[in-house]
Length: 495
Figure 1 (cartoon, rainbow, N blue to C red):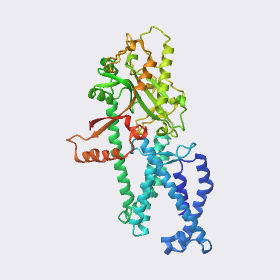
Figure 2: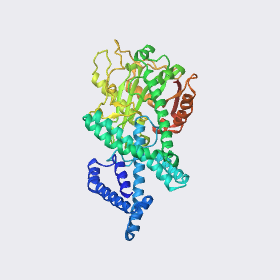
Figure 3: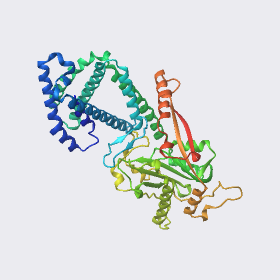
Figure 4: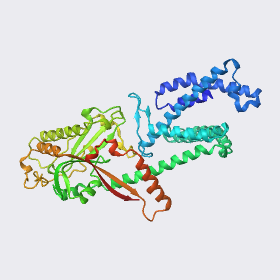
């Protein structure tokens, strides 16, 4: 048992230590100890067949019984820590794939990306351990539950290994067949024995796995449908240009920061906003926060800025990039840094245009070489990640105009004070809008099942998914948006 726990702890920490350290520890220490321990227990059982139920402790000599008891207890503690670490890693990967609700992930190491701590999952594990321990009446039932979980993990690992040998390593089918035959003969024998223990405690890991599988499936389905809706409902630039510089509304003083998960295109929430409200801010900035799988992103590489539409539209996109150790929530000067980069972008754009008479408007961003090598993940860590968006520095959403319009009149000023932007520099205009106030606009797309949907779909979407979204971390909390300047724009999407 001691070596078994040590082996589980070792492989559970594969994502937390270098591969060479794992290989060396297993080859030099763990594997020889496993062979000696299992060989000794097998020899003891051959001579003492009536001690099968407690072979480990009965096989220990009396002189070293208590030292071995202490070491075994410590090994159990190490194994529990490995189980917790492995659970954290699984939840983080599921979160990154959009298969689990957003939870708080704390990175405890600046060197290893896999060393994390998730407070919510830690509490859930504690509650489950207490319930399972208190609920079982016999120690054998806990053993049956443990055996069921281990055998199913062994089978799943074998089947995944077969896929890797076929699709990744491209091994010959004979080698794959030999590996599968040798592994499945042993594991299916164990599995057949476990089937008789399902009603004696083996059902517990199956029920827990079914509950988590249901939660992950519902969350992934709802999140995927919501993201597809936002992707397919993006506003075309032609529609924006058709509205004119005022966007068909009154442009009031101030800057509107529209938070979106899309790194390209104009989100549907913007059209929903301007079709239901009679005014929009003089300057609109679409803010997209992305997280890179690096320790930190330097300050001079954090923001990517581009212009959307002609200059007199005063619409921009800003992609803020953070490493896993960069806490956006504690970035109290986020607005200031964003505006500094926005002003720098405007100055660079003016310098690069160089006073030319060209009627085309271009996009200039601080695209870095480092950013091209990493994956971008969504704010809610969905699976809809892609290699750093080339659309950030491309002109896919920009339609060149034959004549760049001049600055428009600010129709949102107080009565009798209509100033012409024709004579005002864009930098001064942006500064004036910033001083007038900043409003954070966030979308809240509510996913609901259609009326003609089956009962199980209504239950999953309208209740389970809605409950999960309610208890998971809100974007306003992640972005540390002050409540007094927060504006939520809701819309309903039926699936």
